[in-house]
Each structure stands twice: as C-alpha cells, then as structure tokens.
Image 1 (cartoon, rainbow, N blue to C red):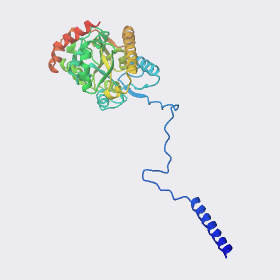
Image 2: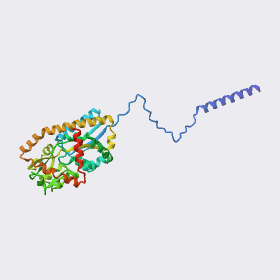
Image 3: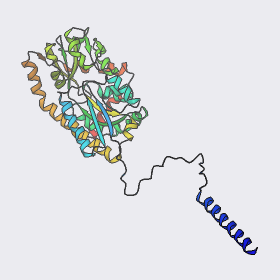
Image 4: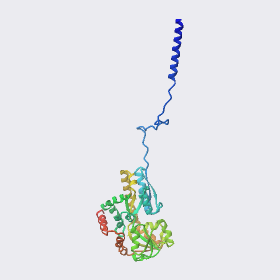
Length: 356
C-alpha cells in the first residue's frame, strides 16, 4: 500500500514539472504601444559619417547685353572665377538679352524673393531710392572710372540701408561705357530730338530726359529694338557703342551721335534673403571678383572706343559729334520733374572727388 502511494506521488510530480516546462517555453504575446513601430528607426550617423554637402547657392543672372558683347564675356569670366574660388558653393546661370524679362519685371521678381542677380542702372534704382537718380543724370560723371569712386564713398554707404528696406542688396558696381544715340534722323543738338520717338530705359530719369528735350520717350526689350527701328515704330535708341555695334543697329539706322550723355553706371543687385545665404567669407570673394571683372570691362570698353567708332563709319553710318552743352542744359528740368533737390549733385561730386 505504501509502495503504491509512493508511485502515485512520483507520477504526479513528473506531470507537474512537464506542465511547468511547457508553460515557460510558450512566450507571452507582445504588446505594442501607439508610440512604437515595426519599422526600424534610422540610425544616427556615427562620428565618422561625413555630413551631406550643402546645396550650392544658385543665382540666375540677368542683363540687357547680348552674348557677343564685352559685358557678357567679361562678367562671365568674373562669375566663373567666383564659382571656382568658392569651390562651387556659389554658382550662376547667365541670361543675357533680358531673357528673363524686362529690367522692370526682373527687378520686381528679384525683390519678391526670386534667386536672381539683376543689373540695374542707377536711374532704375532711383525709382526706388530717389537719391540714386541724379547719379544717372547726363554728365554727372566726368569719366566712367568715377563710378568706382562713388561706389566706395560714404555717400553710397549711407544709401545701403534704404536699399535694404526695399529688399535690395548691392553686390557690385561698374560702368558699361559712354552712351550715345543711334537714330534714323541726324542729331546735332538736343533740339533735334524734339518730335521724335526715342527708346530709353524704363526709369523716370531716362524717360524724363527725352521729355525735357521735347521728344516722345518709350521703352522696349533690347532684343526688340532692331525690328522696332526697322519698322519705324521707334526712331532712336541709345546705349554704349559696344552694345549698339554688337546688336547690328547700324543696319537699320543711318546716324550715330556721340553725345556721351551717360557713363552707364550700373549695380548688380539681389534680394536680402539670397545675399544672406552666402557666408561672409564667400561674400568677400563675390564682391572682389565682381569688382575685378567690372574694372576690366571699363578698361576694355575705353580701349575699344575708337575702333568701334571706326566700325560704324566703315559700315556707312554718319557719325556726328553733337553739342553736349545743349544736352546738359536740360538737366535742371530733370530735377524739377522728379522733385529732387539739385544740391544732391554737389553731394555726389564731393563724394567722387574724395574717393578718386
């Protein structure tokens, strides 16, 4: 009896151990909280993992001059040099011949935040910051090189806050040469412009210059000027000799008047946000390379001036040297038209003379 009881107890213990072993082998079902996911998380990069390269700052550069002009070829070298010296951190796409729109349109796009660099005359900026306008008036400068003196003056520095308030940041200054009139009629003095339709830039100062001489001002995309002159829609336009020549306007105009009324001061501008994407070190490179290219441009333009005049004469164009005093005589009318203080001229001349 005792032996039978012992066997029964031993069997009970074996079954209990087997049951406990099977329970331990069966895992409890996993529970997932809402914050957990079955998708493995992205591992953090180790200290040896290189950070991804930053995207380059890319600008679309727009201007009136065409691909064969000295402006295009010279400034392109400058922009290529910037990209090289910044190791590709700042790059440029060039759009000559106003391919992205008129000066007015591109300035508006740029100020709205587009990643653009626009080339503006001082007269264009004068419609935004009024003190710029007189710096574009006829015969304010005695030479193209005086633009660089004004650019480094306190007078120019003082205007930068006003430009910044208009979401404009200046990258560099320069001049694309003396501007002259090419036309289908002969111009010997300012009075010869009366009654004629003359194409100018869109600024109030440029348009007002023609109005002050009794002409009818209009504006257009530079690329359209050849056909507009050919069809008689306009009777004259003006620009530096290199641009007039490279645009073949001598084919549709018989007369070139060497008035030299403007020295074509320009400024390369972008918006404040785009400028802020360039590091301080790279911005120094941008400005230095632009200044170098702009200086080379003026040197080449002035060196080619006589050759360009000869090219017009060889093409059969009648070249005149009009009475410059007659053009200068209308400048006081421009100050009145634009409600500007004539003393600004004295401030500009003082700034130029102090920084030559």
